[in-house]
Each structure stands twice: as structure tokens, then as C-alpha cells.
Length: 111
Length: 116
Figure 1 (cartoon, each protein chain N blue to C red):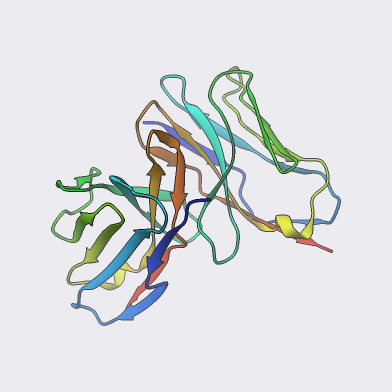
Figure 2 (cartoon, rainbow over the protein chains, first blue to last red; figure 1 turned 180 degrees about the horizontal axis):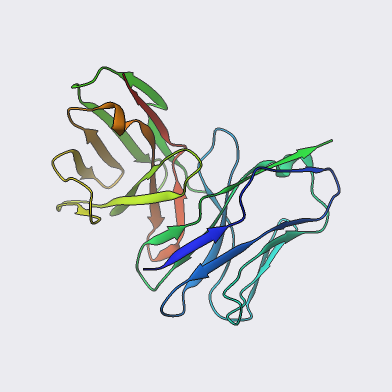
């Protein structure tokens, strides 16, 4: 079945560092890809998405590009802030079917 | 944006008792809600799809009689863990899509269940 694999955390960076969280997927078709973020004490929020190959999703300085050839959707940010500390989930969805999540990556940014 | 709440945020119960978790959409109507379970350091696993006015659809391997789902109104779905056991201890999360937009799902903050 479909699956999503994220880099294991936790990830700890200093403020203004460059961030990459790797995400790869396995799917039979052409899924939509998502990054969700969960801040402490809150529900998951959609951070960005891409619905077809070569699409780039972006929001709040974060970017991810849908790479069909490498089945990847890596999350990047050029300069992280303390407020970016959260758990990040990569996910895919095929049509109207359910979301399939990766295991989540906890990110901590130190001032 | 839309908000989904869950109640309680955490609960501790004795083995053999039943626990009810509520999921509410606060400012929009949700004909469909999803229930997920999350084990420590693992991904969210979809348990079931809750449908207003009809039976829930359960994922393979999820016991229907163990995890009772009731979607009584357009803003409320409940998950009841019946005869809870320590292995049911987990983090339960609900979500609701905005009408016409399955990509836009709003998630509740989750309920941590600990069964002693």
C-alpha cells in the first residue's frame, strides 16, 4: 500500500540555520502531497501542498517540491526561527482517499 | 480559520471502563469527520471515517465494537473506547474537512488516553 517515510528526529538547529526535512513516498498512482505542522498543544495544520509533479508548495518561508522521479517532497526553509519549533508531518492522498502520514519529525530551534 | 475541538484533552481510566471522546467543529458543519490514532514516535493511523446520519466506515483491523463512533449532528462526532485496556492507551486525533475541500482538513488538538 501507499506509504510515507520521513527523516527521523528530533532535529535541533540554531536560529537562522537552513532546514531540510526529508520525505519520500511510495504510491501506485499520482498522489497529492502535503506537509502538516503541529505546534505544541494544537491540532495539525496544513503548511503547504502540491498536487502534481514539479509543483512547488510554499508557505511561511517553507517550500517543498513534488519530485516524481525521486518520489520525494522534502521540506526546506532558508532561515528558521524559534517559532518554527513544532512537529512536522509529511502526508499523501490519492484522490478522495484517506491521508497517509509519515511518522513526524520534531524540530527544535534554539535562540 | 476553522476550528476543531476535542474533549477531554487527556483522560486516565481503569482497565475495563469505557471512555468517550468528543470532536466538535466549532464554526463549520462537518458531514464527515476522521478519527486517527497516534502511537509515540509513529505516524497517525486512520481508524475510521465518521459520517453524519449513517454508520461509520472502519479501516481494516480496527474493531468496530471496541471503538464506537457516533456522528449525531453536523458539528459533533464521538469516539467511545469500550472496555478499555492498557494497549488502548494512545493519542486520539479527529479531523474534519471543509465542505467541498478534502485537501483542507482541520484537526483537533488530540486526546491522550491512558488506561491503567
